[in-house]
Image 1 (tube, rainbow, N blue to C red):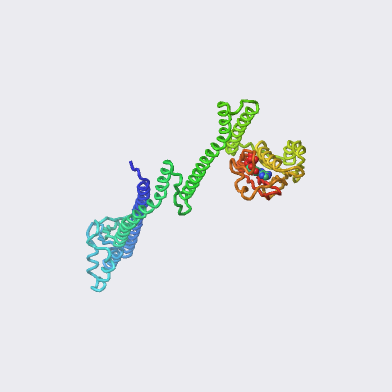
Image 2 (cartoon, helix red, strand yellow; image 1 turned 90 degrees about the vertical axis):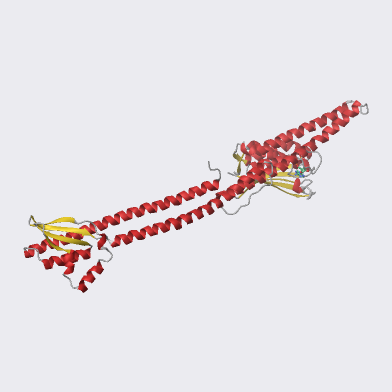
Length: 449
Ligand code: ADP
């Protein structure tokens, strides 16, 4: 069983090269076969020319004219075969040797040099071709083909070429297969090692990215994944220590009061019991707030989005705050563009706006105003919650969306963290601008579709 991926790649690439070279070998076989068939046909044609000429000569002279058929024998030699001509009694009338002997030395050497590529000593056996004239057998032509020189040259060259291909291309294929398979598997090996490191708890592991192919995309995803895991781990630790800190304060206060009562230093009267009850209520509020935050974080997958007509939705939410605003002496206004709508989960959107409105009302004193408005922007919608309240100090501004961060006394510091989670779950953004002492504006950018 082969375990290493690069050896599998190597074998695969090498197998492909062998298949390609085998195909070349097979094709060469087909070509040689076709070439031979072509030569065969050519040879038959040539024999036919000679028989036809011999029969015509016999017809013209009513006998075998040795001078003329001698020329035919020379011609046949130049066409690539030796002949013997026998009469109807089977007696030899002419053959190639005799025809050549009848030639002058100069012409003979010329004729022989023409058939030089076809060595006469490698000729095959004599084959008979009967000669006819008007239905009567007038004799027999016997033909012995010389080994076709052109065919030998062709086959020899194709063999050399194939051998060269096998050695050169096969070697090249092997080297290339080796390089390519190493190159392909190197980033996979790195990824495997990095994944192993992550599984052992090293979340700082990253893999280098070189290029744009699928493996690089996988590496990028891997790096993003480890980055997310690392961030989540940091957040988890921070949340744990934040939560412990938040829970410790009321618990310590309660413990102090209860110990005081136990030692008789603090009276167990209504006043002190109410104080302890307030601390327990705060503990409950913290736990509820954390539950709400956890739900907000998980809400991206459970949103029930629909088209919400903000012209109806915003006044309805604002109406829940009208009584308390009136009591506080704060003006609460709602404004929106006609027919404006947003694609969101109504319950979650209501939670977002309620949190922001209650913060603004809390921060705004008598005579001030809070305005919630909706306008279109590009493909989306902007919802603004603006107040003329206390504003936020510049040093607090970067942290107000963090869990448990409070810029003022009283709250839990979870409201804006929940808002941020919910807005981002909708694919939106929340931003804040604030001037300390003058007021703040929270802007939600939400997709309208
Ligand atoms: P909390 O439960 O304390 O209100 P939030 O997360 O809602 O927590 O807000 C974080 C801090 O941001 C608050 O302590 C508050 O001081 C500040 N803040 C939020 N909204 C406003 C606002 N509209 N005006 C002034 N300060 C604000």
